[in-house]
Image (cartoon, rainbow over all chains, first blue to last red; front, side, top):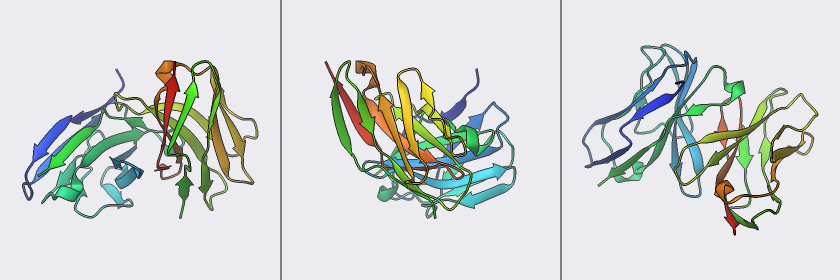
Amino acid sequence: EAQVTQNPRYLITVTGKKLTVTCSQNMNHEYMSWYRQDPGLGLRQIYYSMNVEVTDKGDVPEGYKVSRKEKRNFPLILESPSPNQTSLYFCASSLTGNYGYTFGSGTRLTVV
Amino acid sequence: AQTVTQSQPEMSVQEAETVTLSCTYDTSESNYYLFWYKQPPSRQMILVIRQEAYKQQNATENRFSVNFQKAAKSFSLKISDSQLGDTAMYFCALTNDMRFGAGTRLTVKP
């Protein structure tokens, strides 16, 4: 089944403890992107990647890191999480951006 | 910079009636694509409909259709014969960097 797999689905962590949210797609898509969703703000792009080893900042990149060492994987790293990073996070991929994105199931992150 | 604006935070409609969700956007690109996504309470993001800017014909997918006004930079979604399962957040999005609006929460009432 063609899909984007995100893990974990739920995560509660403490301020400052490094964490990684994994994202993998099995569709050979070039484009991958991370979003955070907050009430009243919609989905805001954190980082995106148009190909292996190519990543770019989105609208809200502060406090996040990504890497794209393989085409299928695009992990999101929070080196020192803070409470304002409590949010719902989505990974998404697309063959080209013009056909829309396929989304993962989301990760609900709470930083206390 | 590209922007997407959804000015209706919440809307409601009676089952079987028609509702229209609004979206305006701004882009300097000459060719682009517009999307509507649905997010039900399960939180999964589902692509509802896609419109290519260079096509004048409005896209239609079953009960979902759009009114695309390129000059006005408007892209509204019409849902006909609303069903309880249409209750969801609806997001308008614009390529090439898949920028999203803030969303409209639609409630379909029995």
